[in-house]
Image 1: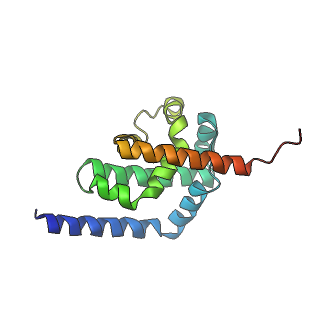
Image 2: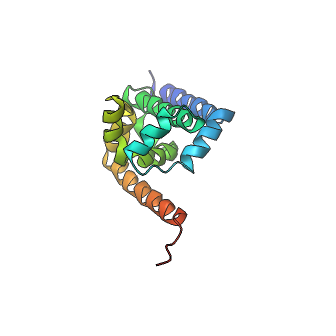
Image 3: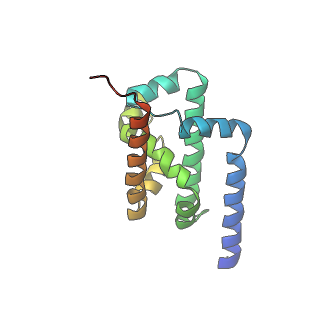
Amino acid sequence: MESTEMAIRQAELVLKLYELRREPVMRQARSYIGGAFLPASADEMVALVASGKQDGAYILQVYGYWDMVAAFALHGALNPALLYDVCQEMYFQYAKIQPYLSAFREKMNLPEWMRNIERVVEGTPEGRSRLVIMRKNIEEMARLRTPPSNA
């Protein structure tokens, strides 16, 4: 396929993915994951996902979406550099679960859960660098949400 045609198809895919992100329930799910969702352990993630409550559904919806998008990049439907440039949110949301991902997989007996997003984010020096920045931002968010102790 001619490179211009391929670029246009990838741009169309990015726009379709953007439209999916704007769907009302997905918007609510992304708002939760991007905001209030700040897990402190794999056990907390397991409890949320296993609760049967809306927060657990949001976790599965948002991370399932981003894992699908990452799979597109891994299988050639979406250029990884384009994904890096237009989907910073994926890196931020992955950074929220990354420290607990291995233990979560083990506890839930889901060894493949979020493998695509892990491969994309951690598969390049740029991705790993962005992950470090995102982790620092998340740590600062958590710090700001923790009330000061009256020692």
